[in-house]
Each structure stands twice: as C-alpha cells, then as structure tokens.
Image 1 (cartoon, rainbow, N blue to C red):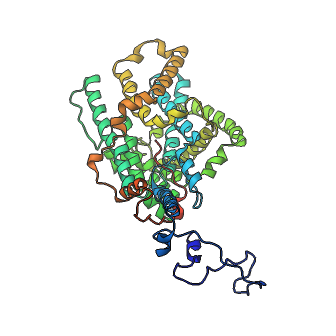
Image 2: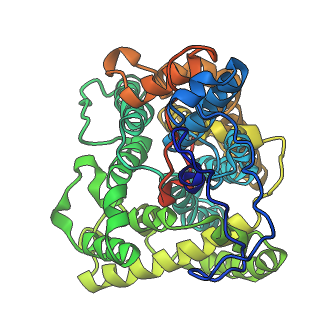
Image 3: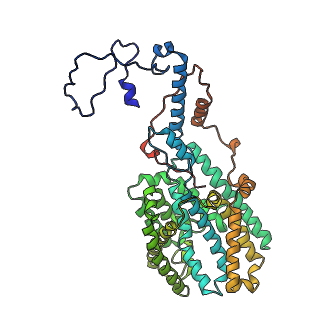
Length: 470
C-alpha cells in the first residue's frame, strides 16, 4: 500500500506517474520499446492528506468514499492489539481479519470446558480416596494434567500481552479484582461454614482456588520478559527446579506453585496454531489411547507408593521429607508426564461446535464458584454418609459434580456474577488516548472536512494475536 502511494505523482507535477516494471524485468535494464507512448491512465482523486488541492477539486462523492475507506482500514489496523478471539489476518486482508476476529475457535472453548469439568471431578473424588483405590488412581491421573492444560491454554492466549494500557486494565479487572473479592469471600465462608470466626483475611496467602488467579496475574505481567530471553522454556523449567528444592520461599502468594507451574504457561506463550494441529489428527488420537491406558495402570500402581502432594506443586522436596535431588528428578519427570497427558487430552477435544462449546467462555465462573460447594461438602459432612463411598455412590457424586460445574458456567450465572468476575470499573481508569482516537475516527461523519488518519502498518508480531482466554 505504501509503495503504491509513492508511485503516484503529486498533483502539482506535470509528469504522469511512472509505469510499473514488468514482473520479469531485470532491475536496471532498459524498458521495452513501445511504438507510441500511451496516455497516462486516469487517476482517482486523492483525499485531503494525500492529494492536496487536487482532492479538493474532485467531486465530493469520491472524497467521501475515500475517507470512509481510509477510516475503515485505520480502524482495522489500529485495533490489532484489541480483544479478539482468534488470530488476525495479514495486511491487505482487513475484511477477512475482521470476520475472523469475531469468531471464537470452538476447539479452545471445548478444551476449557472439559478441563474445568475435570477440576470439579477431582475435587469431588478427594474425600473418596481413602476407601477406594480406583478413585485415588483417577484422582492423581486427572491431577497430572488438568491444571497444566489450563496453564498451556492461558499462556497461548497471553501471547499478545505487551503491557499496553487496555491490556493492563483488563488484567486488573479480569484477574486482580476477582482475586481480591473471592479471597475475601472464601475467608468469610470458611469463618462461618467451618465455625472458625478467627480465620484471618490475607491477600498474601491465597486460600483454596484463588492461588491460580494470583499466579496468572504474575505470569501475564512477565510475558514481555519471556519474549525477550533466548531460551524461555529451559529457563522457566530451571526456575521450577530451583523452587522445588528451596524450602525458604514460604507461602506468600503461593510462590511455590507460581514458580513450579511456570513452565506450562511459558511453553503456551510460544505455541502456534500449527502446534495444536499436530494433536488434532486421527493419528494423535490413536497414539493417545495406549498412553492413557498405561498412565491409568501406573496411577493405580503408584497410589500406595507415591505421595500425592507432588501433584499440587506447593511444597519443596525438603518439606515433603525427601532429599533435595528427588525434587529435581520429580519436577522434570512430572513436567514431561504432564505435557504428554495434556497432548493426549487435547487430542480428544472436539474441534466442532458442541452443546457445551458456549460454556467455554464461562470457565472462570465455574472454577471460582464451585469451590464453595466443594469446601462446603467437607464443612457440612456430606461425605460422612455411607452411600458416597459405594461404587454407585461414587458414580452419582461424579455426575453431580459435572452437572453443578456445568450450570455454573452458563450465561445466566455469568450475568449474576459479572460484577465480581468482569467489572468494567470505568471510574477507576483514565481514558486511553488510542481508544479515544479510534472512537473519534469511527464516529466522524463521512462528509466532514476532517482529514482521515493514515492507517499504520501492523508490526509482524501483531499479525497473530489471541486475547484473554475468557
């Protein structure tokens, strides 16, 4: 587009615009001879920024059309850093990019919904582990990959984060504010439901599920740093290993979990659509079957031989009562196993729209809200009855957990709790100058005399951006 503008002649120049070279012509070679020169083709009038007096002499209908087209291109190009649900198209395909930006990939929504169901199932199986080895095996099997899968997807949708004002605002309203509100809500719930009125409110000590919000807040803030370093994944894995052998890190902000789960988020930052295409094939699904079966058998064997605390990633090796070198081995081994099982999980995620696809946008609601029932079932001794500890009782508990978290992801629940999950908080932030400029351009009348801004070229790294995962 820029080259085309430079090839056009100025309205004041008496010479016609230079004719483009033949595609097969050699640079510097003499142009082909013509019997008689052709008259210069008629050029459409330029607008007020590109054509000077010639644009003002043109009919208004051409000027208005040119301004409208420039405004549309400027809005499409300047909005490359805004929220979108899929990768943007390259320059020169603004219309397809706009339609693609509005479409959500059902694959990721399906993956998020299925992962949050596994989270709820794991919490419902936890009280059954003492009476059922099968429940304990399923528990550690699911815990090996359900949160790593969430973190890989979260990293993938954080690739466009550059610390811009609208991104920081979204980080505060979508993660920091829900963390504060639910940390307070969970503490008050524990005080009264567990009959512990003295339990303190502490924003530095995440309780139960809120650790993931503070971890995601820290990870996303450090995204520009991970894009700068030469070997981000090995560096993140080294930090996780050091954390697993450092008992002095303490419990503030659950930094052990933040650091030990860090590699999964970082590897998601550097994944591309073609990487997900590798696991969305029939061959990948077939290969995942023996891997999952072997993992289930190993889980059943390891129930009585392995400490399940390793799957929480919240303690160092010394705190678990083993030598430091065991922490190094376990961190590396569990990272490899978790990534393999995450790939197997993604291989079976449906790629088309399903009845639960729309629920993928509400997984944060299901994640935070189901914790009240998961903890309440312990506080109120629901598992003290005999029927949940029978085989059919375990099946009923599993169905109830899946149904509850599904309801909590629905649109009506999102409407009720949006004030806490996704507050707008326009009163707390200054107006973004770039957003204000885009709004002025989009609302300006087509026939006004204000010049249309020149569309800027997007940076290469902005051509494939994904936004907040929902």
